[in-house]
Image (cartoon, helix red, strand yellow):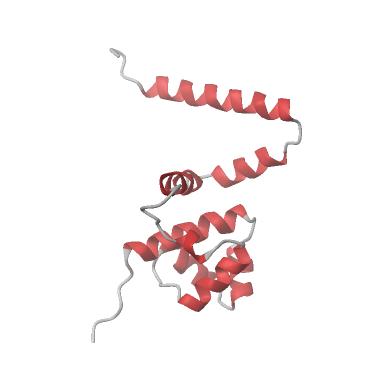
Length: 134
């Protein structure tokens, strides 16, 4: 009998667990303790090296306060493209930390100013990488 192999779906579920766990401010240890596994097992889930059983995925979803469907790629239906894009952004190093810090700013004007600075920095970064003859 052949051993079970992980799939692209397992890797997608792992990436979504990572993004949602970080968005909730939970460590791998805290998530693992809450669902009855070690942090090493959570690492394997998040890297897509091990499959997450249905019951455990349901418990993770409950702890992260999301529906189980949040872990899967909904390729059709309303909002599917936006959901995929959001999870793509959240995988960027520091994205969850930046979003959490931004959300903690209570002053609306300060938020708008910070957003303007970040947009300017992104434009400068794109210009830096553009070819000289463009």
